[in-house]
View 1: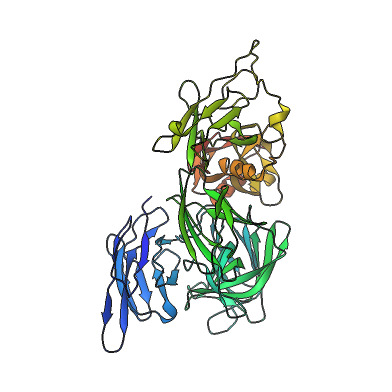
View 2 (view 1 turned 90 degrees about the horizontal axis):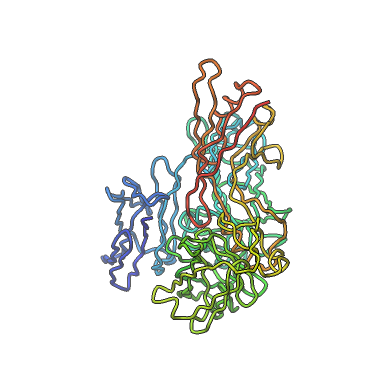
Length: 582
């Protein structure tokens, strides 16, 4: 994926910065009354495609990107050493980008398209009736007759609403898309503090003519954020709204933990962030070389932070100050308030192959009696001392010992797994990578309490009214009409839970799937011709529901061409779901 960079150049230093998308330069233009700073960069969409004719605004100055997505704009020296840009393009959500002028960290500047997707919900509702809107697990509840126009007059017509939810632990990555760039905020006591986000929601509402709507004075809307996995639990977490003029988050209200969600209420709409604040916090930027998963946990005592690994295998996060922390077992020093640690960790990557050279998915193995497993591509990464010998013991294969010489300059080692030899070779029903192997010489109890034995991913239908799922077979039409989405999962032969926390997180990442698209196939009951309806997300479309309504009972239809994206970023097609309408 092509990277898109936004670089602010210090007015006290002349530099030439290169990035994957563009070269950025700095110039300071002086006259008798002011200084200006030239800001240049490139804008792209979430797939890395260059966006042309994008408007970039700063104060009373603006410019458009050229045919390659590039822009260059000279702005007055920012007040408070903070630059704020508004980025606009038809068909996309506006993006406010802001950070310190002295911060030369390059972030992708990507725009979110205004279209239905996993994390964007577009709907219409009657203002008099209110609505509850869900996006990617978060919900927004609008009160009845609770909206006003810009002039303060009541509005009771049709509302167009767009809800965006960005998760700190799921796709898409939060950092390239969120407003601002550094999660800096103004707390209730007036201090400027960095934040650690537990999720953020954006709500935009317009009337039938496209004019903006807001909450009526005295009315409140409810926000519900899913509690992110791997984060420390809190009874309450402050809420923060994004101030588009200052480019900072502002503390206002709080959320409370209710089950697996954080719930709070707000009196106006913009971006709302559910975040803990770090008093005098520090910053981390760490490159994870050879790392094989899309998330990693940072531990600071009893607290933990889940960081998203971007396409450059880099994590960026606010960090607790004055406290040492660890990343993948590597000890990091305590950072002073405001300090930036720019570092890297080299992971030694192992790829497990069978004797025929094929990658072995999800291989169970132990190092120092701690159980691990490879990802779907047979890979596993660990930051160990490669000068020491590493002994690896398997449940189904002969043990191996690897040393520094096995990794080479690429820090990658191919381990060939040879099946255990037994006097009587029985065929084990539980197989890895779809092949039968001799039964293990090890005790089954030694392995089963620490890892699942699982089958291939499968797709299933999720319903709006309850938590039931449907993987195929007979179903009543009324039930099918309540279908909400197509999801995917890995089924297990055992239900034992992984006991090691770090292993559990690695395992969860290895089996994470996001539905990208699917088709529903029907038969025209008059002509016998096939009817194919397509969804480019996990959602059941209105056209599909209309066709279900028309379908007679005792008729088969199929959910097919189900494509999902795994935690290893590989696209897969899952088996179809056969549906018999009763």
